Length: 181
Image (cartoon, rainbow, N blue to C red; front, side, top):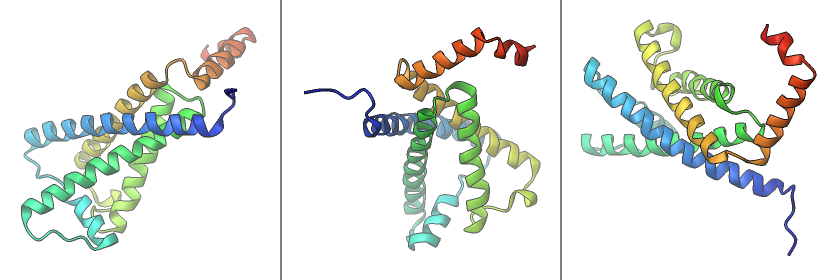
């Protein structure tokens, strides 16, 4: 049996799998970040996940315990699945801070657009600066964690080798020196 060097579906599957693992780890990190912040600020847990699900599929918990459970289930599923986008970013060869910034922009930007559409949050121009900063911080924790985990899982991959080769070529041509000066 011959193994193909350029197996696009295999690379996609690998990136999705690594992304899901990274998303799971990042969801754990953002959950911990939010728990600490809620203790410090005395903020109640968000009901945004339940509001969105109620609007989209009509799931409406009857008792408070069911609402909290559904909210957590949605939070973990949503966060884990967002890891797939980190995997797709990884297919481009991006890693480290540039990949984290792209991922952060995608997840926080989507949140800022989607949640007001479902009356689950105020539009950003109607929010307090402190609330915006806290939300941005939590999403940064998520994106940075997802990137650290994804990059660790992807170390030595073909995409990483390709990116390192390009960087080496740019160094040799002196292009990076011009931009770093």
